[in-house]
Image (cartoon, rainbow, N blue to C red; front, side, top):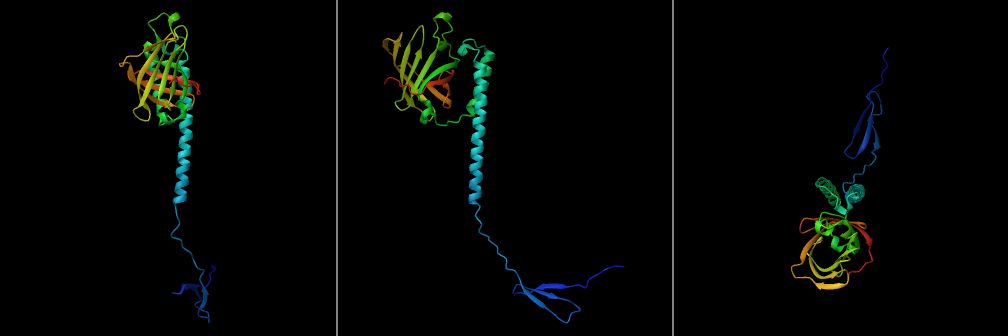
Length: 239
């Protein structure tokens, strides 16, 4: 046996009322006011889009910092056994170059000359420059440690050797763009004591391709690579 219920018709009027009618009822129509609906066609998406943009930027910044940290660790590990580059083979130099390029791609400082991280005294921990490494000299006559100091506010730089030579040279810097300077050397100091005026031809350029508060990567005009670590941010170059 099938169970069924009489059909009921529901219609709406032009005045947004509901009509309930039954085909076998003496009451032809019962009318109920319809529940008003609200449509807001002017909801602004700007706050949502701004929030998404901020979150995306913050996430990207964190990922970039994390990437740079791991690459720096890889770089420091690779150069630790190379005596600042003096013991590096061609294969070692190629490996370091690849790591450095990854680090440069993760550079958090796009305008190094405007960054306070640049100022101070840096220790050279790796270079491809054979003249700075003094590889043609016996080891006991080579500088044990090399330093470079930069003060962006006075546009001055200074290169320093340690025992047994103690030679120094100072230079004026001229910005070429936000990360590159032209270098004009002005005075050498032989044994750190005897000043000798540098010739006008003693010039070059330096591009800072990575910079944070503890590590700097630079490239010279002769194609040499320099990796340095900060040791004294308060150091001032003689004017």
